[in-house]
Image 1 (cartoon, helix red, strand yellow):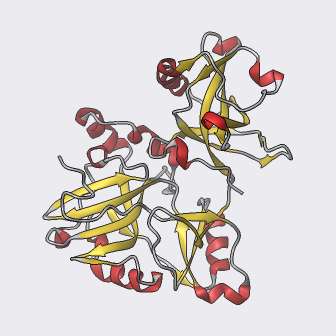
Image 2 (cartoon, rainbow, N blue to C red):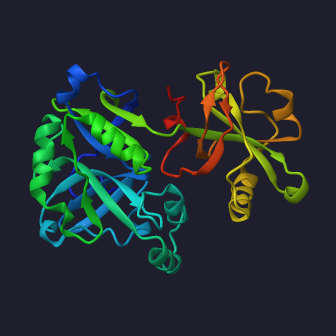
Image 3 (cartoon, rainbow, N blue to C red):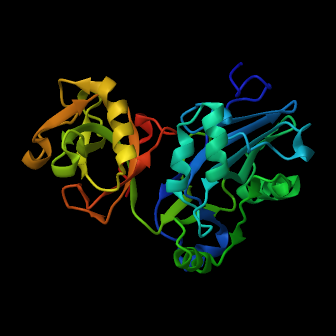
Length: 332
């Protein structure tokens, strides 16, 4: 099948990215729309001629992985490009990245059908960039949201329109914190949609510290993990020669045995004789190190960063197949 960004005559629209930051000051509060920050996988939806495609942030067609995300019947004749987040929920009804993880790598229909029963997903739609021959990216956020509200996207079982509020961001911040959600998005009401750009017009305010990382190697396990992975060696692209990574720490917690087995299988073909990190690693991290080509992106949660840029007490959250190495940067 042709590239879903062009098969329907729709120009490719990479998702706009938010900059990490803090809540806007009180005197600017009413210039922003506030949304829940969903803990899932970003996906752009293309709908035209009754066909539908989901494209991840790193340009992979992921439609087959989420068959329940068929669009609303009322939109089958429309030509649309929408932006949203694929989200799974835990037993308490909270967005859960852990619940989404088992779905992210699947492409086999039988396995998807089984996982679909245990880990259903929804598509939380929060923006519209194209409608029936009209590119909407130059319209202000407030106007795009009005168009989205009128579409009735939440008339499909697995589609939901992500709500927003104008002003009073502090109330949403406190509500999401109390509910155990990931955080808040603050978007300027007059901001345009800037495809593929990271803009301060959109601010992500997290309740927990997470960091996307590139796996540069691993160390051998001991005790119950003997013969397996003990810890992953983590980096972020640092702009050095040859695309070397800046070392940001190692993670040895947050793994299940199934996760370790899967990671081992994915890392073996990437083994290398050379360290992908710029400079020398701390002796404790480099001891018994096995290097790999920097190709796999994951995510950790951590307590804080040290003065020399290392992640303190990181815990593994999972791989991020929706993101490429070039997407990873050290978050402020």
